[in-house]
Length: 269
Picture 1: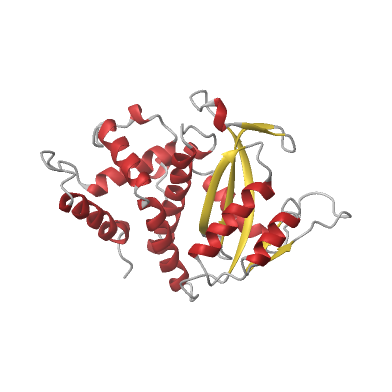
Picture 2: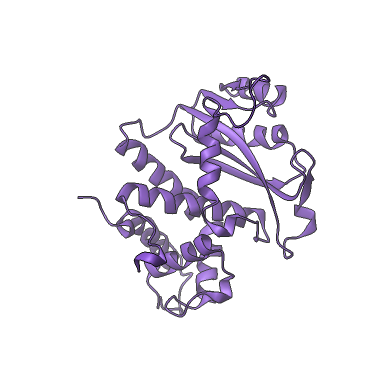
């Protein structure tokens, strides 16, 4: 019997709350809201794309929900949850908990009016003014790391620090696949980190859409993320909050994958 989604994330959230209490950070402020209700509300914002202030009344007050979101982002809770669930999914799929290979890709998206101009840029290749999401996934399409930058930052410039982070956090990874945008900078940098970066090139004679070996894994992940309407456009003031929303979308996807739950449509309500 598969565990309910709440049991997959509850231990880490409860440990976070207990640690704050032990440090005296919640003195005089009793915990009125269930952590599951808080997380459900954050996922609701991520999935539907609504502003925080438009949260339905059945959820806790939006100010409380946003406060938890900001604290969890700052304390790395979404990154920890994403890593925990990724290991559970890999184990359930018969793989080693820690990946040994990865795929790098990037996506540029437009931003909303509230995003500071200094954190935006222009991607001349895709003709998009906004931000760029550089991601690293394993071969099961599960997110390993993400970096949000201005769209004008080249794939290579964003890929090298991202690959450096991956090498530090996941020493078992020795192989990476990327597209031709990740030139010698990433290839040479990866070699210095002990990661063999292989560029998967498109056959110039090919016409129309073609699924490219290995690269399709990260491209499919980017497609999955876009089911969360908050990610269709970047609404977050801080790039770190954008990264948290991406981790949150993957948390939602992985918990459904582990519990075999599907998103309820209004037609089935």
